[in-house]
Length: 248
Image 1 (cartoon, rainbow, N blue to C red):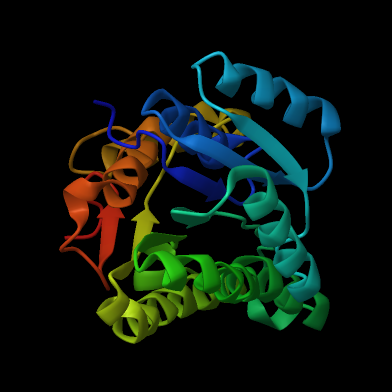
Image 2 (spheres, rainbow, N blue to C red):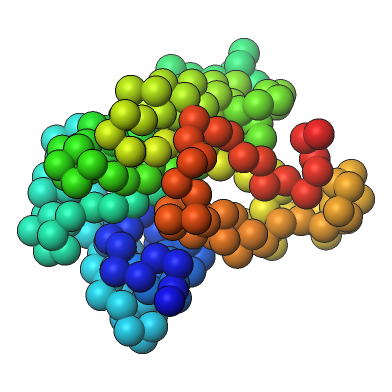
C-alpha cells in the first residue's frame, strides 16, 4: 500500500521547484492532490495532467495564500471538490533579498505576508475539517536560514524563524486532537533557480556541505511524504533540517 493512499493533500505554491516535486511525490504515493498557483494557468494545467497520470485525482486552484479571505475560500473549494483535507503543506514562499539598510517596508511586508501570514491563513482554514476528523498533519516549509540567520536576508530569516515558533505552538494547541504540526528546514536545494548561478559559486557551496552536494527537491519531498503519512504519527512540534549536514 502506498504511504499516502487516499489522503487529501493541499500544497500551496506548487507550480515549480520544491512545491512541484512535493505534489508529484504525494501523487506517486497515492494521495489526492490539491495545489495552489498564482500566475501560470498553463503550468497548473500541465501539472494537473502529470499528477493525474499517476492515477490520483489532482486539481490546481488559483489563490493567493497571503490573503486571509482567499485562503478561507480555497479550503472551502477543496473540501467541496475532495471532501476533506488530511495534510496541509504550507510551501508558498518568496525572497526579497537585500541588506537591512536598503530594505524597503514593502520588501519586508511582502516576504512576511507570503512566507508567514499565509501559514496562519491556511492553518486556520483547515482546522475545521481536521478537528472534525480528529486527525491531520500540517507541514510548514521553513529554512536553515530561519535557524542560523543570513546577511542580506533579514526579512526571509525572520519569516522562516517565525514559522518554527508557529509550528511549535500549533503542535501544542492541536495535539490533543491527533493533529500534528512539523516544520522542514531545507538547506541548499538545487532547483531551476540555482541553475542560473555561477557554477564556481555553486561548487564552493557544495564543498562547504559535509555531504559535498546540494540537496534535490526530492530530498525535501520524501520528508513531506513521511510527515504526512501514518508512519510519523508520534512526531509533532519538530523542525527537521534537510541540509546535508550544513547545520550540525
